[in-house]
Length: 267
Length: 322
Image (cartoon, rainbow over all chains, first blue to last red; front, side, top):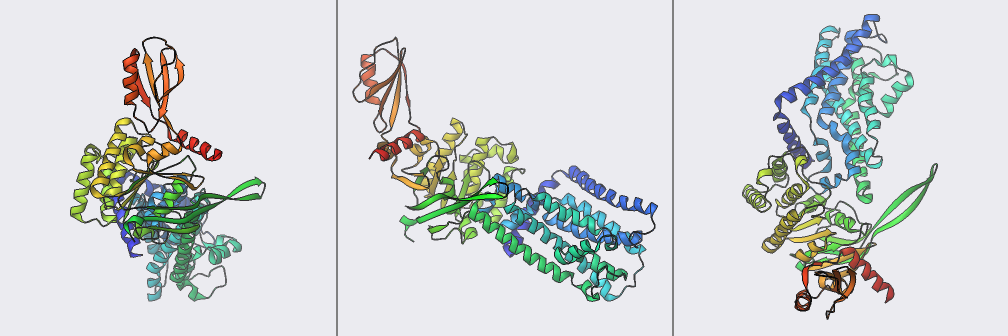
């Protein structure tokens, strides 16, 4: 584990240094990343020119959901977003070159092409979240305050788990990166809207099957003092860290199984 | 572990299950034995050529020896380590060069790959500097260090790859087709470097190749594998004998003449003034040339080496007969 973190730091550091050799290019791509995600939110604002509420949520409340989801996803994408290239590595055989190095493969794959420009999305999400916090009416309690950073960290971990599990799946199906994108990029877009606008079946799916609801919906509805569409006890809002730990453990197992199957078949 | 068994395989096998689609939702399963009860040992400091036709199981063997692939059966040890179980520990002690794909970081300057290896393999500072300086000098990498790897030519990249595989002083170096696609000059550089590495550092080298000259110039021992089985293990000269391989002496005469007569060789083809003579590969061409020069009006001559496929093919033909 420690060896993996150390290797990740080394590789990511090397990519950052090489990016910083071209500062202007870095500044432009980061801004591009920021702008692209910004228009994402502009879409939601335009919607609110026509309607006053979305599924019963005001613009500020939707921004609150949006910000939490965007920051969590942005951090995960920044950290290990390059993992969806694994299928290509399996196909062209370059994964073998990672297997002969004395550090964990997961760390090498996760840190490969570490792109600091992805900070653009994190910055954009943070701005939206900050704006939302000044506008929404919340009865702040210590537990609600504490829940905020915990939610962001857990959400990031849940998305990381999805990235790792998706990459593990690519050991078996090498063209599955689009399937993975459906869950990562698709997932974060889904979470940007209130749970009340979706069908119950879908909400159940992202609560009990692929627990993306724990990224923001469940803690956010608690903080906002709104009912969650499913009849769940209130304390569930505080379970994201547990869910995240479970997801990471499962993703880790999936990764090991994937790597083991690669090493027994070589393809 | 005695030095004579530095690399040791006992009855190693690798079976792949290939699934073929035979219709809608129908799959046919078939087992492919890529490596079949393979046993051999390589002593510390040996330089061994590992050859065979495409799909013979060479790469699969190398992948098992590096820990990339897990064997389906048998026992395998490299420097006393089971590669598939302790892959990352073994990685510290081996160097691997894949001719077809690079272990260098594609988009970054060459030197970045070396800096990263320095830290990844925890190479002591002084050792790293010494090894890097040596590789840069002998492999002529000085002007290339700041060039992104993707901009290097094949020969330059190969030299860069070999340097990367050696910075941590590996005890074993695996080379998978190290001279494939290289020009004559690059080939000579790579071969010269490997010879020196083996002689000076005592690095054990196992190389797969299609180029018989690689073996001739580098390896005292050659192993031939086909269909996952070891067909021959011994000196190169013995391989020529086993395959009764022949070299070809091509002579250009001043004018068309009837087939020349030379003891120890026979004319296999006459094309105008050009005649081709076959003679045993183990024999020197010098006496033939002397004999010809004394009796015939020579304009030019050249010697052609037998290619590996022909030697192996002939070896099989022998086996089938006997």
